[in-house]
Amino acid sequence: MKKYLGLLLAFFRASAISDLEYRVNIAAKVLTDIIWYAAQLSVFEVLFRQTTAISGWTLETMRVFMGCLFVVDSFYMLVLQENLDRFSDRVRKGDLDLLLAKPINSQFMMSFQKFSTPYVINIAITTSYLIYALTKVPDFNWWRLLFLIITIPAGLAITYGMRFFFSASALIFTRAENINYVWWQFYKLGTRPDAVYPFWLRYAILTIVPVGFIASVPARLLLEEPSPWLIVGAFSLSALSIYASMRFWRFALRFYSSASS
Amino acid sequence: MAVLSQLEYRFNLFTDAVLQPFLTGVIEVTLWAAILASTATGTLAGFSRESYLAYALWSAFFARTSANWMYEFRMIEEIDSGSVNSVLARPISFYEYYLGQFMGYKILTTALSFVVPVIILSFWPTISHLSRLPLALFVTFVYLVFVLTLSFAISSLAFFFNRVHSLTMAKNIALWVLTGELFPLDLVPEPYRNVLIHLPFANGVYIPVGYLTGRFDHTLVLQGLVSTVIGTAVVGAISFSLWNAGRRRYSGSGA
Image (cartoon, rainbow over all chains, first blue to last red; front, side, top):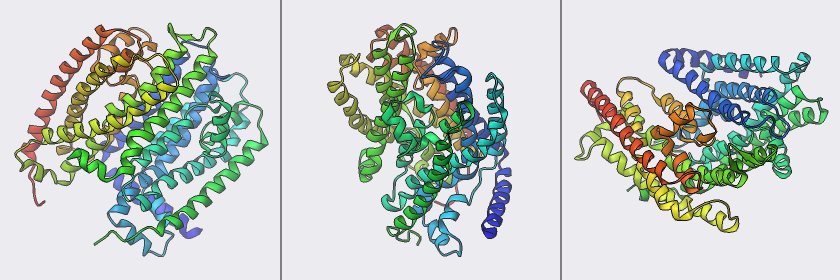
């Protein structure tokens, strides 16, 4: 464990040095995500001009939901996005060969080797936005923020497990860049509060494809009477996601044949 | 050539042309159904529930057709890695080469993916004027020339900067809103609504889908075609200047 934490620290340091080489790129990455946040917010800001509530969510609570989504997303962008985006390429170009030969878990290397350090700025922005959104909720109990200690890492772990499944399928299909877009469609289900979906879909996003744990569950724990089932669900599904990703990685490696010359 | 290369990876093509827009359509239709259920009158900005559901379904497919991620990344990669040398030596320009590839790919994906909404509509009749589909698709294909020209401008920046992929992301995310993919542009408050509808970006989703679902008649479509042509000319002039300036300072070495 100590070795892996040390490695994470070393990866972060190396990534920061490499990112600082391209300073315009840092600004571009931060700006891109701000545009994404603005685009997502614009949907609800526009819709709430036409109605006062959508499936029980008001503009104030919807902002909290979006804040939770953005915080999880910014952590995901910092730690995982670049690694999982390059997955297919690294498999095709034979980079995986080198990683398999190292005395380190290959899944760990493929998933965490490159941090996108510019997104540290985004974490500050999204956290500020979430706090701003919470200040607009009448009588908000600030102690409930402690739930985020569980739900944000759980949301991140679930996102990782699912995204890893799609990325690692590159080992089976060789060229499967577009399957990552399918992941994006599932992820999109999690970018809206679970209450807007019909019962069957709501059930699905809290169990089979648990994208509801990315933002809906954290937001509900902040805004509603906390349900112990949601906390248990967040714990167990995040553990299950990580475990399933490890099993799938071992399975997918059986299909891998060296690609380097 | 583009068609053949896409057919080589059929699973990739299936996810791109069919699965992805289908899932988007399902999500968007569900979201709009929930939104409309929350309104007392069942209408938003004067349009009915059916109108929004039809918009949500079609917009997923038009948005997929009018977007350019893959070819823009490839164009940037060619310049970044220096493999543009092989294209420069050909008797066809970089722009023409990619325009041909891009259009071939889009014709194939459109032919495949538009089967899905047509099938859905045969089981679930909603507000869609299928007789308007050819003109709506024509608008989209004219818009595709504009989109590729925009990609040409961004990829030309790779001569000057090392990493311009982020610009592709930023541009495509901005296009979600500007094209009307995220929500119909008629929900935007004035005066922004009027500005957005008259920009060439609206021809990506809002104008063809709005026309197909009966939100407006052909007057706005013609206006949209004019704005796309003007937009293409403006972006074209900028991108060819960038390309020529970039090529002057570029020295190709190796493959």
